[in-house]
Image 1 (tube, rainbow, N blue to C red):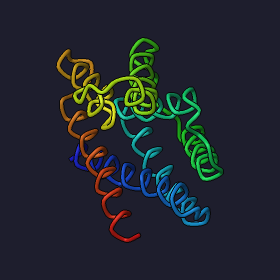
Image 2 (image 1 turned 135 degrees about the horizontal axis):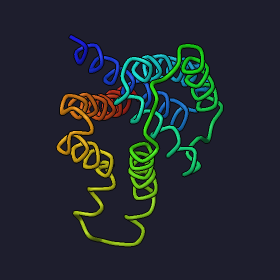
Image 3 (image 1 turned 90 degrees about the vertical axis):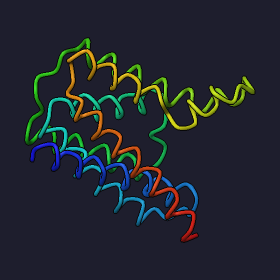
Image 4 (image 1 turned 180 degrees about the vertical axis):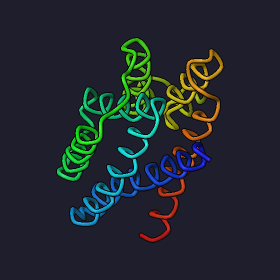
Length: 175
């Protein structure tokens, strides 16, 4: 039952994250981008305080995006502030710095690779690998295979990624 709740939180978080970004980036709709950002913060923070494995993932995504300078709108600042506030109020599990660093580097690799790889190579495999941000997926799978994470958290993360893609498809069809 715990992983069902976690999968739902991951799914909602991925959907809200992408929809918020698209509303701001494509429609310049700060109001609704912020609403979806708040929903993303609530679902991501809920997963973070609910599960140590989710905490690694969502904190790594946050830090990776900060380092890659992807926090580039007021809707991101609102989302970030609410996420941090919720985590400070309710607390997060104690994390291993090594595992967190591995996850941060994976998230950062996804963000940097997503922006740069297609500009430096025509290799179709590499372009698809980074376009769909596979670094974090591979790292989470390896952490699950090695016993650091549960395989269920990998499946939860896949639900986040699938919802992220679904949000993109829905947004494109509605616009």
